[in-house]
Image 1 (cartoon, one colour):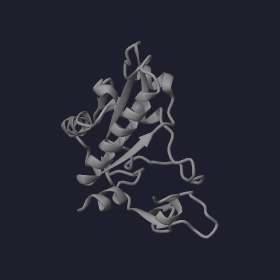
Image 2 (tube, helix red, strand yellow):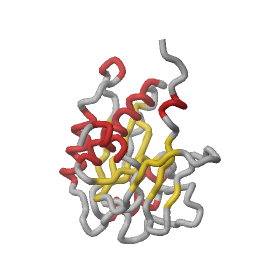
Image 3 (cartoon, rainbow, N blue to C red):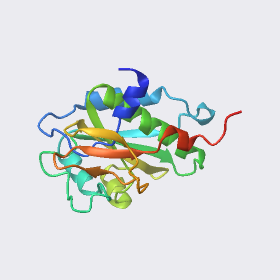
Amino acid sequence: MDFRQLVASARTCRRFHEDQPLSVNDLEWLVDCARLTPSARNAQALRFVLVGPGQTCQDLFAATRWAAALKDWGGPFPGERPTGFIAILAPQEGGEVLAYDTGIAAQTIQLAATSRGWGCCIILSFDRQKASALLHVPQDMKLSLVLGLGLAKEERLVTDLPSDGSTTYWRDAQGRHYVPKRALADLIVGRY
């Protein structure tokens, strides 16, 4: 698959094959991909916590919130939950630039996961206090993002914006997940 196709396929995944879990070695491979990315001043300040299948994975899932735009969906339901998590930690005093490093690492992990048929949900909506205690986040670090991972169970598709211009994602009757994207011509505001 070419890179543009990989990017188009790397949509947020919210349903997973829970009966086919990723291993800690799979999660380690994803972090190894992120480790190779650029970082500000090459400081390589981010740290990662790997959570494989088991009780900690279930407890961390309970601290996360999923798909605010899908008002009538309470999932992922049992059997569709992530089978692993990667938590991205940043130094407490690292400054604003670490937000960029965190985004680069998270996107790299999502692309790497997609390249193997795995799904990834980059989660910013979670109980920080509960998750930090559960993962024993060191005092000098903060929990920036949590990535839910597993073998993808849902089809995710990019589509054009509807006529009303809404960017809200939705699902059809067959459970396919649609993500509307603006047209390229609407994004480019200058050519010189």
